[in-house]
Image 1 (tube, helix red, strand yellow):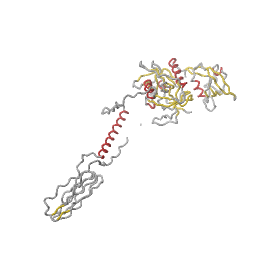
Image 2 (cartoon, rainbow, N blue to C red):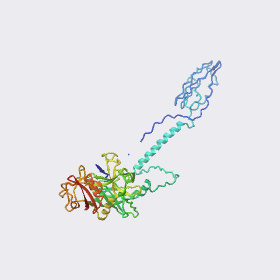
Image 3 (cartoon, rainbow, N blue to C red):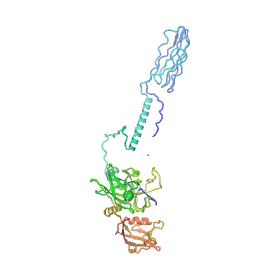
Image 4 (cartoon, helix red, strand yellow):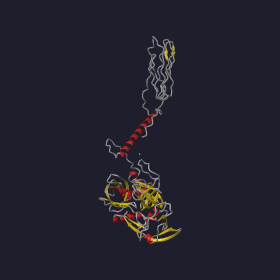
Length: 503
């Protein structure tokens, strides 16, 4: 199995033409006939059309009289439109002095009455006066404008937040409602656990002397200022680099590496001028964790500090060999597998149970390949791995005490090939060493090159990395039972584990 260390404007919609409604319709004025002494000329009229923003059709010509009658009034436009042009009349050398009569008022929008055109052969038209009523068209326009303004405010807020709010030309304050009452969250809820655990987690920035580095996570181990994290989180700062730890309240402290274990992938750093009110997280018992138990992971995925995700324990004793890709020695663990979302930056953060106890240190993820998220790094596919806290606690205590890790061992070199159906003792040791250390635990138990170890106690061993991971869950001096095959026969032997100091 290949594992990988962990070591982002919508244009406004075009506004539709206003469609006025809800405006009361005024009664249409009665038509007036054109007048002459020899008869009456009928009034010209235009249709009361409904075309939005249209212009009423021209009025029909008044019938000529003797003398001719005046022009007929122009037809009224449709909703939102204009009065139509006047109908043509026939000129007269002796017009009636009472003509033209005062034009009737233009009707309101909608089914309004007729408009009036001026006398003579004119074809001009007049625009109705603006209305004071509020129809739906006006309301829609108002909503669109408000939406555009709100969109601008939202974009501004996002931009300001991205810039750490360094623009003093203006501000927008959003206040939460205070009439909903206080929300009480039970300590056993995810929110309750997170509220209690977050103040005891830190985001770690490690930087080498050449300026290279990255972001990870850690948690408070004791009141003296010790922080537990992954080795690959702080590796860049081990040899004279810069190391800082930032709490969720924004307080930042310089720190130094007290000890690091590359094989275990565990490290301890200590805060300089540590505050006196540190609250260490409670450590649980990873041996008692069951598949299906709830998990809560805290970390800084892709630099997003103080992120909380949830899941379950998907498997236990999962053999994982991981590397940070720098060519350094691989790390081995018999890991807790969880589907809680873990991403680069979660490394070193606590994996909590449903009561808020630390049951593991988030360390590695299974990946489908590089890429995604715009960072060149892979993200979570629901396969995360954590170092069991029982093992990590022992390692951390040794690092605080001695500054160096202490590893349990059997004193034999095993193949890292996973095709042998177990952990096969090699014919040659690493470098110039013997495959079975003279006088070591394996030699005392009678193990030889070629033997294939298939079990450690009740744990099935399918490869060398699996054996190493299982051995490292124990302490030096622990007694274990090894099952192995030699010449096609299965045998068992008890072994007292030895010790190795340092990487």
